[in-house]
Length: 303
Image (cartoon, rainbow, N blue to C red):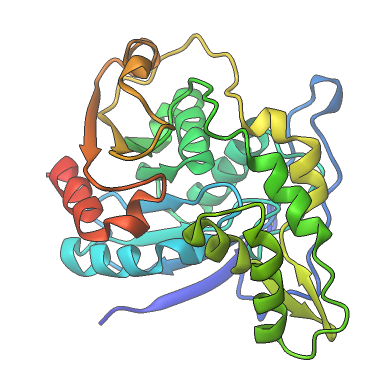
């Protein structure tokens, strides 16, 4: 039987179950100033039980996303592979803690703290977009924690496809939901307001999953201030010289411009065993657009 377990992990204080709501999102002080090591924050996660003998699958979502983006494929892959499957909210996303630090170094440190606590190392890291870059950095920094790596529709090479992200944040901030009486009404209003800036219905729906009710008010659970302040860091990848020699798959959407064949030489500089695969008729949200093809590619890589 499959069993979901949701919990928070508190850095250096062990792991405890939480009846967490959206009303109290802890704020962690920034600790990456002056070259000091980033301080990990509490991450919200769901763990699907499975056979402990095989490396767990760990899913990391993209910018503006959350762990729920992978609910369907996580459950299906747990059933198909028999493995443990972990989905995680990144800092400043979903139900995880807020922090003014939104660097890839900080997001990697969060996972370096969480995964050993859960006994899930080495694991198979599967990261989409921002989560893919977090997974890449973690594999480069701590290769012993990563049995193999899958980066979904992203590379370390900067692209122009993310140039609309500042407009997304501005549009979300501009939505006034003060007079809405219900969450469905607030989401309908927000969708109407966002439509003028964001033509893609799938992207709008992704953003709208972050609209929640807190103490009778409708708010974005994303830390939009931190995302806006550090968007340049999120859209770039830290300069690295070390390599990750484990098995690696770069999986791109055939209709997306985020991961291109021209990136392959730079990819193989840091990931010499990298394989490249395209999912036809998929956009940037490969796992949502073509879930069966996405899961088939993951299973083939695991075999």
